[in-house]
Length: 590
Image 1 (cartoon, rainbow, N blue to C red):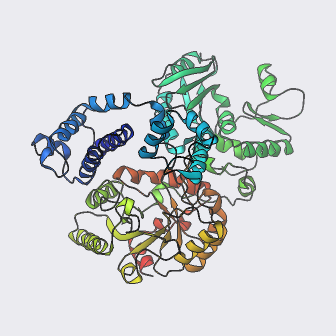
Image 2: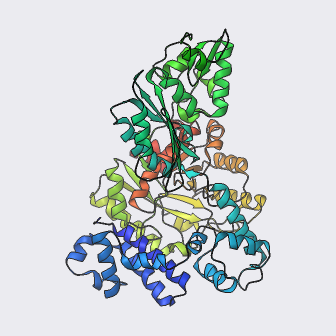
Image 3: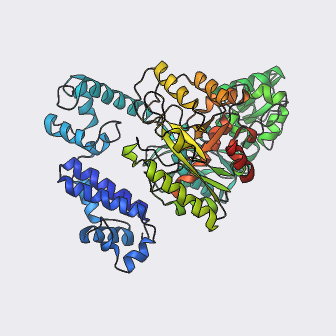
């Protein structure tokens, strides 16, 4: 494949730098690849044109040898040097990079001093206390490594919603295209929009009497299937190369709504729905809805031709048959949605089309991978009216955070961009300002007053106890220049737990001070957690669904954030970035 993007090439260069560090190569060589990656990320011209004109080697940080590698990657989609380098390193060493806090230098030391080249060997060495004895490690590091290994094992069976959806959507599209299939949907936790997904569930309907075997055969023979774990005429289960399992159930068309509802779940929702049916003298299952009197299950009676099915063509009709308004899949968690549906009090959930713009996005000025103009163009392509730029502040030195001088210069560039009228999208000038250990902000009030908005976030000292962390964040919220709080707990799903914090007290402080709490839509974060939002919004807390985008493609993360907002029962009125531009400008001025 040709035409690999500059950011994808930068990923490979950064990966090479890590692999070279694992091998103990000269640090200058490692830094050369990192510098080349930064140059590509900051490049404002079309990479293909720069290569075609022979100018690549003249760019700062890119010498002749690196230029050849970049060109090979751009034109062929692969790099022989990179593939050989990966093959020369024990896979276990690369896997160790997935453990939080373990960088290439520490892994190299573990390998050289203790001969460790697998996570299993690392686990044993930690349990035997060998790691704590190494220079530069200690007891605390050993404890953190063991916690990281435990988390990796616990999380290994689950996948981010975003990743699972990326696998599921094309399968669903192809499934719907099969001649035998009348209707098809995905179900399970993916359809409910849970932040992590165990496996994929697909329901396909065929005409009564139609041979379902070709559909099961197709499902088992898809590209990327590593293992077929179960196979029948109406069911197939497969495991993909990434470890994700997928189940297909094929049902007659008249059973589709029942099967879809049942396999969407959750367990608690289904139990409550069956109880509701029984209270009305009905029996509900994946096979149908029928009068509950008489012997045997709905499935058995259907097979014997004795069932008196209540005909239902859709989930809407299924809920209606039980005296309920349609309950969106995201709300089916057994958390009061059935009572709300009976009373006609279900929320009108926010949708992606309701968003008029987003805040909390990064550019190449800090650790982003696209320029200000590229981010604005991408936001315009999405049809948004505004885009907030909030690059890191100076204490986030690892993210090339901006000092006061660079921030003021960026404000000037944003003002010029808006005045020039090159884009229909309006750019708001903000900052993601570090909350320091004692709750002060990284910039003083004079600088903060120059900005359109301020996102305050914690990026260090995660080990504070709950009371200290809560007090730290509340002090920041009480600063009159803070507009919104970023990623409440700092969690990274399937990677690390959030820091300990009293969410209820922080929500109280945000409401009292008129501060928004963001729903960080990055699929690794989805923070503040959906489970807090319903009650918080009822009490007046406003939400901003922010992608925390570090490149143009990251703006699409809002889809994951909207899912989480819907699970939190949020309506358009609860989400501040549903305001049109004129009202948003006025709201920020207030």
